[in-house]
Image (cartoon, rainbow, N blue to C red; front, side):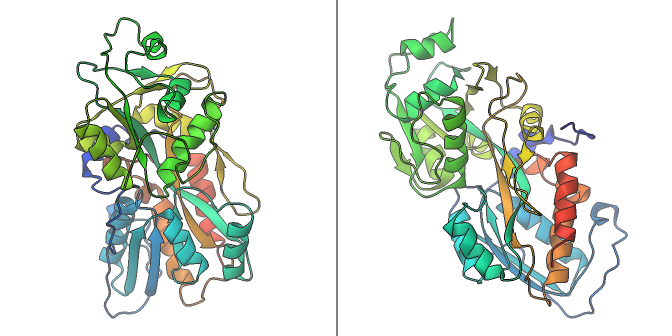
Length: 379
């Protein structure tokens, strides 16, 4: 999959400090509630910055992933600035909570950092929709950093296998021979490793362990899971808690969204791929890996499968994508126009250009086109 446009991904690093809450934040309240009287309009605005916005009246309530909360806040602000008769609220709360609220019929769509699990979770969501299955629509991609606090070490290479051993308690000291082999010429201190992981169920954990399960198969035997299942380490609430643990602990290491590393000035590692190559976390490398993903869902479902086996030395393999979980059919007739128009704006080139400055990357063009087509087909 080739990118047809190279959007302003360089804004990712410069702007990531603006991302004040991400997947680990547990304090997400409602984002961007607006209202007012007025008639519904289906005319696009003539503002160059919001050319993709088609106004509809009504209200939407959504919740879930806090990784995408800043993106949602910006999109809601853009939409409500142009559409005074709309009311949209995104409550955060975490991926698992959002999916449960969607299944229970309490919200109109959910944000989740992992697709609906095949089996009972998918079946429950389908039952809520009634006349059509619940589907996964990828919308907000972003990298996961492996942050570390090792005095005197400015650059650190960590293979997927060594990361797996560190986070499962098999490597316990920073001057371990295996780490030294990853870092020839680097003076590593005789210092105990203090690993931190999420104590709460998390899409960040799911995606990080999915990377380990694929690129360190022999060393990581705990699979991919939103809940931490490996032995050892210290649990911390949210990505903010993990980042704080790393920053305040000499010898600390943890995984969290890039914004937490940049905000707290935490160094982050150059991680290894399945081929043993070390891949720096750069915007271009994140987009390169994302562009190789395949859609493996059926029908209008756009769940993705990452190419963790890639040998490409410019594809950073440790990232997450937040999906919007929505009914393909069976949406309330009164809400459907607003649902389609709001999500359509988020998936538009204009909406996607909002992402790099907030610590994310934009969807590759081919995937973006599929997302817009799927949103247009909602019923």
